[in-house]
Every structure is written in C-alpha cells, then in structure tokens.
Image (tube, rainbow, N blue to C red; front, side):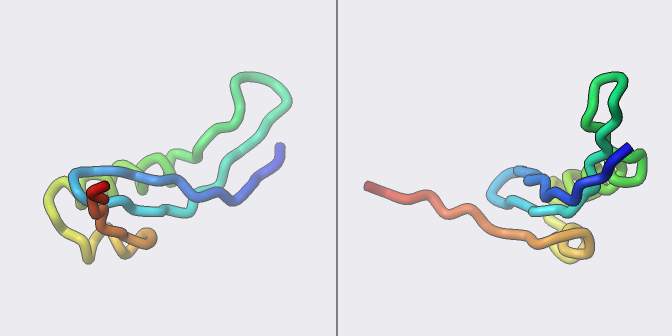
Length: 71
C-alpha cells in the first residue's frame, strides 16, 4: 500500500475549494482510494460551499471565487 498527497477541487456555484487528500494505492482492486475521513471532508466542503459558509469550507482547504471572463 502506498499513499500520495493530492489536491481535489470541489466546485459549487461561484466557488472552488482546493482540498488536500491522501490517495491510497494498492496492488489489488480499483485504486486509488480515498479514506473514509477524506471522503467525508470533501462532502463537508461541498455542503459548506452550497450553504455559502466560506469559513467552514476554508477550514479544510483554500477557497477561490470564480470570475467569468468576457472576451
């Protein structure tokens, strides 16, 4: 079993959160896997962004606003 630190992007509305997670690589099965804790963290961030609770989302990673670009 091997772990690798990655960042997952969660997009909700006009916000994106960059959340660090550990991906778990195993020789058997369908890897990579997320731990139950990291999966829950991503769900919590998504729900916080939906509610507009940026402070809660920022507890788990960086939060960015999306700005449309007019060409």
